[in-house]
Image (cartoon, rainbow, N blue to C red; front, side, top):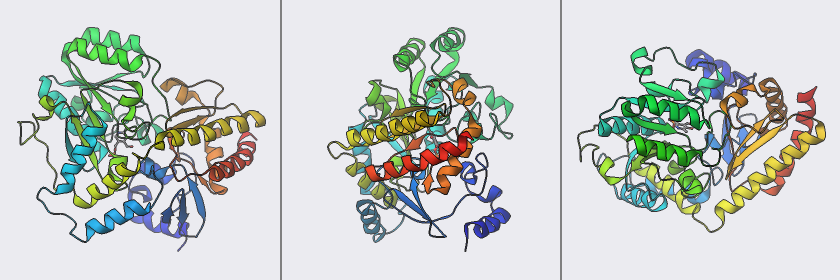
Length: 426
Ligand code: PLP
């Protein structure tokens, strides 16, 4: 069965042929490939073609695909059953691990996706403060909950649907939006609406409008603004958690949010999310408190086993230093290739995540990210794919490295980039 044949079949039965929008390659053109297997830094499609993978299942695969330790943990857990519907020991170990690695999280609730984590966190913020409004940032994506599909990033940005049909206006009205990295705008909004806002949710490094780090002092200033106005600061670390540093972006930048959300890496490749924060807030969640949130499969023993195995691996000494150094090798290398080819290009990176922009400017805002040359990115993407390098199929997604990527993989990527940039420029 070829990629094309599978996609034809899929198109008849799955909306757009996929189960999540950006997988469809709509913004970059062409058809997606179907992965038959994955190992280390590579994916192999059903036709046997190998790709160096910089998507990493959209973030979780920080130790590479199919890591033997993660696989063995899953195999071991599966022997004892797939789901119990009662508490299981691995959930307790997971809670102990997360709260140890991320000190602002004193208590945690496991859920099944990043979307569930963010939806639950804002319910908690509203329940705890008695206020209704939330603040989010233009170009930030927090999953597909109604409240977040307002000026959202990722697929919603890629497809130019900042507010999805189906989101009631009454719901969207409760979501106030701000430009990322613009402190004056936040100060103005808080001066006007501060006492109506339950929570401010932010990707501490924006990864769904490409990769945009916070400017120096920005997160700290937001922290102070939230404290001043009794607004809960929610760090959405679904992407950045255990990715930009062991303790997430909050450790990297030294900020203590009130609530944090996680996903991706904590599931080791299984469907997992989590939200947590100060005990006095988390104790308001049912059944300890009145704010309802539940899940049939939450804390699933197989998912916990995968996540715990991954969290064990990333605690190895030097793990993040090596990951950051390799990421730098890649982004510096790409910059040198672009400069050599006379292509307008800049990069951003934090820890193991990176962004590529076809512009001369250093990108620190949503407006700059959307002004970069996306047509050139699309040509570059296709040139790389043809040469066996898989980048995120959208100009508005961050890229990810894993500990399985070697210097040779990066050298091969740079060789492919030289040819792909030449083509993209033409
Ligand atoms: N929050 C952030 C920052 C994300 O990047 C994502 C997904 O990419 C989500 C939330 C939603 O997570 P999920 O796709 O697991 O629902």
